[in-house]
Image (tube, rainbow over all chains, first blue to last red; front, side, top):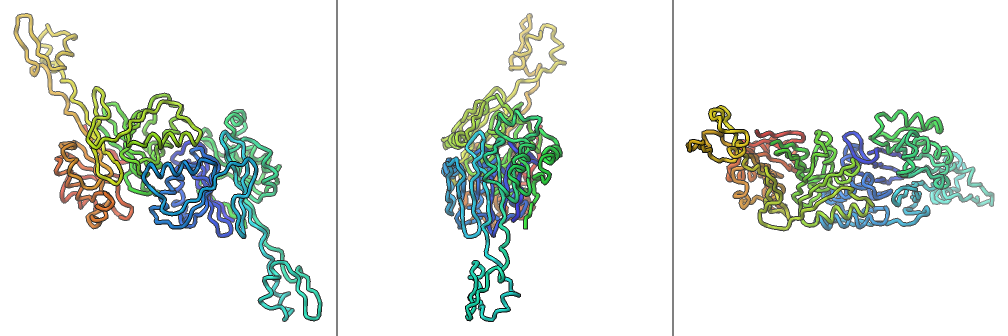
Length: 303
Length: 303
């Protein structure tokens, strides 16, 4: 599982401060998360193949999270895309894109499937054999969801040195073993599955939480997540401003990480008012030591 | 008069290829012309003060000329703008911006006045004491206008060495002289205006023509312009593609410049298929020698 930060600043884009966008590579998927202005250029800069993106998750309809989407959708067409794209985001996202396509007298030229979200409860919005994606209802000025990306528990791994002791076990039996079944020899002896296989790889999970006020209600949803991105727009010196604007401080992000017992925390969505990001790290580490700063181009790999 | 190129490439923005946007400084105005994705970042990069921009001219509603507008409009609000902004562009531009503001649950917070254009004839769309702006109807796949920015003829300049010979001429008479009036001495003698004043500075003009197929119908409108920007998306090797997509080649841009007897030509809006721009310059110079290439950050000053 690999996360690449394309942009991690709040509000207005600047020369070296791109708005929110991330790419999550998980089980052969390349998920794009949020799409602020300039995201398509960041995708090129960090060599993400446009054709690999089939699912785009938009947390909310504030400009710094979505104004790059119409440009990306248009560029897909110019690149002669034919594959369907799925866009998950708040109700209104379809109108946002469709209106712009109409007024610019353009058409996508490939199918765009909009999955408009309205629920205030966590729900599964994507699922296949290996991955599922849940919404994380957040508390912001506008309807907003974070997203929890979870690998499913995979198959058990064959312990070939054990398996090879039993010539009766043939290749056609392997799938049953991977699925957890015991094996019965012709003499009636039962060979338990755990003596023939290893545990499947631990499924990994990533939770993306931006933008949000401090909200303990998300803790049960993101409990024990391997990697948590939680916005930290402000430091504690602006805790009142965080409250008014429904954003979080670095220490609030760390508190959530600690309560949810996640393994690693990444903070980002920094306000442009702060010159240095060092204080974000310091403030967070006091509460949750395993914190890292989001930085443009930085990747976080969990194996 | 000073023109700054913020972006001069066609179609999809890339790391070093920004879509069309220019800033024209003329008689204390700072006009923004077209606004592709990322324009607000380019404005910061080239240190154009956001507060100085009061008029934005959009040639047409293709994404590479307008997708940066909603971001800029939103950033104006975040910068606590109060001054009115005037947006001139094709019918539909109001809906494009207003829909996005509504869906992002934002409001501009300052007045935005939309001047929606529908005429297929050249018309005056802005005028004050010193400057007037005309549309230049272009021939593209979608309703498109270029813009002709013209300084008005200014006042005559006082020749103070001549004026001071006549003690009867007082300061309160100066404005009449600047306006071209003769002066009559008390003894009835007429002092002609041209013996007391110099010619006003020659008014300058800039014509912006993008995007367009080769179109001789624009020649009368841009005749004798000091500076012409004419799109040159292709070289002559793609003249058929230029025809189909209603774009121009470098030599076609040069032909228009020559026919219109402009002083200087700038070409741009290069297709990303060409690695080097040298051939654009060569192809254009064969027909119109005083050609320069548009390049990001380049300024053209005419005094």
